Every structure is written in C-alpha cells, then in structure tokens.
Length: 172
Image (cartoon, one colour):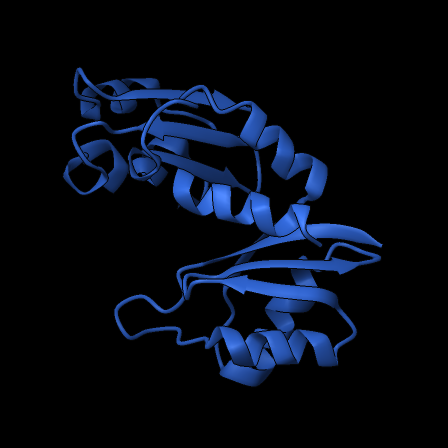
C-alpha cells in the first residue's frame, strides 16, 4: 500500500461543485481505499491504496455527485519533497501558498513579473510553484492571475493546510 495526498480543485466554492467530505470519505472507503481522512471542505484527502487513485476518484465523484473535479495526487514522497523544498519555511502559514500542477508549468515570465509586487516572492521547483504574499493573499494581483502565468492548471494550498496534511500523512 502507498499513501497518497489527493487534492480536489474547485470544490465547495461559491455554492458550486458541492462535495461533502464525510460522504466522499464513505464513498472512498466503500471502494476499498484505506486510512481515508479528509481535512476541511476544500478537497484535501489522505488515503492508502495500491495504485494512483486520480482517475478513479474523478469518475467516482462524477458518478455520485454529478460533476468531474480536477484531481491532483501526490505520493507521500512527492508531498514530503514539496514540504522540504518550500523556500519560505519561516513565514506565517496563511502568506505562503503551494500551487500543485499536474504538469511542469510553462511560465510566462514577463506576465509573472508584471503582476508581482516588491514584497512578493516566488519559486518554481518541479511541478510546485511557491508563492509568498506577505501583504496578503487576497490582495495579490499575482495570486489572482497565477494560472495564466503558469500556463497550466493548478490547485493551491496554504502552508497551514500543508502542515495539517503533513501531520495527517505521518499518522496513517
């Protein structure tokens, strides 16, 4: 069995793509996934299985909830590497965001630099884009337009959520 972190993109936002985590947990357990745990309503799941669950989960959600979310999966090793590679370790958790991409971004540097303010910092490591927004994530023009800069779809989690998921995966 391998441990996975599953990140569902764009669920339970603005009354759309409603996916109750308790129902999802039961569904996943009934499908044979082990050690299923969820964190908050934004689509964070830790589970154990023998194969990458990305496609199966997208199909299960579509079949049972009527929409197909974008699903990103990370093995425990991939997730731990993203934590280790975080260049903003000492920053407050709500100001650091990890953008997980299903493929390596094709960054539009000019657009990225035009949207970045002096206090913001960013770094791409593999398929994870790290963004530090010390003046607030909600105020960041870069955060609002990040996918157009990355050239690929991504799902973001702040450092507080990453730390919680780290604790969850350590306790599987």
